[in-house]
Length: 347
Image (cartoon, rainbow, N blue to C red; front, side, top):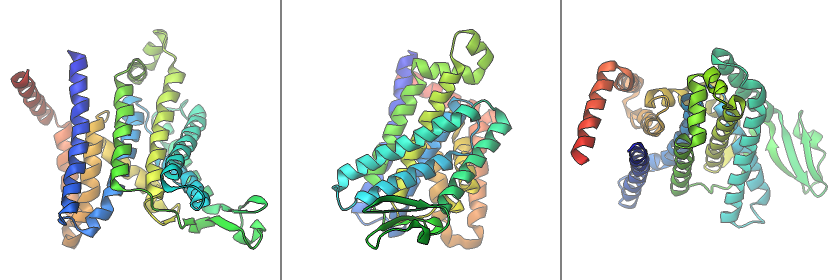
């Protein structure tokens, strides 16, 4: 019975994403979607992906991380470097697939390496260290000058002149100016496929033996360890998978724009807090809620942009309403009653 309920819940989550995709596709084909909103579809989707990744860390593992924008930044720049260097040598489809593999692999690697010292901490200490990690990554990338010529790769931390490249050399990362000329291979269809794959990985992990062990560690690490669960292993597993999914969001980010820079707007403290807001308002541990919250809260300010003065007021009211709907005891009881009636009616 419990397995059927989990399967039904998972199918509902997939169905919501697919329904959203079909609605947007119909609106685009019929010309009822403005060019501005078309440009927001891919960003909305990769923010939903990183919200899913963060919810795996915060909601399922129970560790507060504010550094997932750092993993997103790593995935974005590692994949963009590969695409920039190979855009004239490898066809679009295999190049983009390889860029995804590289972005995910680098983000997972850094997640594993960072997790070794960081996961020894808890609570506020973990949040501060992961926040510092995200800021370090952003600032280091802004200081890197990287180029390639016939002699191979060149790197400098000072300026582009110190690369000492030949005249035919190509500057790939130009310090704070970032990477320009990245191929725009990402589109809404690819972004939805990546979101569905991310949901598949996280939801199946939650319902697996490993997922139950991770949640046992979250609930009481001492009791879990006494029951024979390898606490360190499962923490590292969840944190690394979460970092890898954030890296996938970064690949979509870097291949949706032509100029990639490691700015605070996209990879800084405020961006990390915004993603955490998506997770909290969608429900900590509620993967479907993270997707819905990210979609609504990302599109809402842009759709209200014409209201000027009242735009952020309406946005704040929506935040309060969503928080009350998700966490107020009366609202929780009402949702449970509605769900019980629906299940009983369709049983």
